[in-house]
Picture 1 (tube, protein in one colour):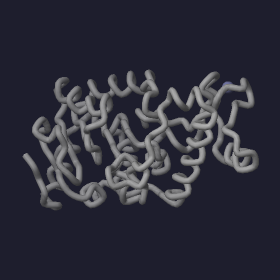
Picture 2 (picture 1 turned 90 degrees about the horizontal axis):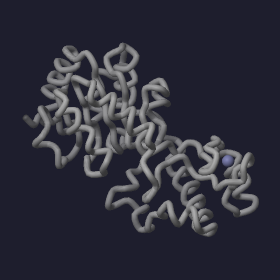
Picture 3 (picture 1 turned 180 degrees about the vertical axis):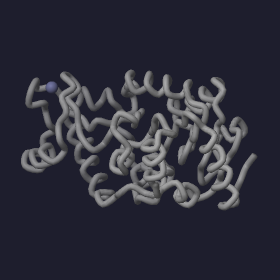
Picture 4 (picture 1 turned 60 degrees about the vertical axis):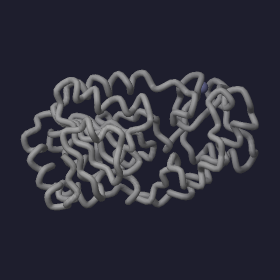
Length: 253
Ligand SMILES: [Zn+2]
């Protein structure tokens, strides 16, 4: 069933959430559009004029590392003022009241944590762009000091502990998926009884395999998105409309 009427969509969702005992949310770029975060994978994004720097190149070429950091800081400046939207607050509330066991996200914008969802409940499949990590020893590094040094020297940062290359803690093209996050997402998905896929075009794999996995394990699958997705026919319910509007009733505790 596809629901496009706002009141009906809210009512359907309310009923499903009420009878759910273990809800898992799965989010993509669409939940952050009202926060002003650009969807840099979308076709009309100015970021697509750059060919993405693949992980192998980042590792092997110091000039590519510098370019990657230049782009990273330029992108950060574009959405430095972004704060959580109604969708983020709604999901944080559902976690807080014990309804939702996890938020699995394809986003790297840290807005689920910023809306109050506890870090251990947020599973990031594509990493997090709000800090960096050493690719050799795994140490966390903060962007503020990296940027200060980068602007002073123009050189890509090396780890202060081991000398290894430091990269934004996101998953780049060609970089292996984070094993721990994938395993946690799998466990949460197969145990859910209601799986809400929100604001994801459901085309980027392996992330997009989770909604079907939930369905195979008996969960009710709801897809909430502004546009059609390739999995709409597999969903129990499709809510098509503005994500913030549909989730607004859940955004205040
Ligand atoms: Zn290191």
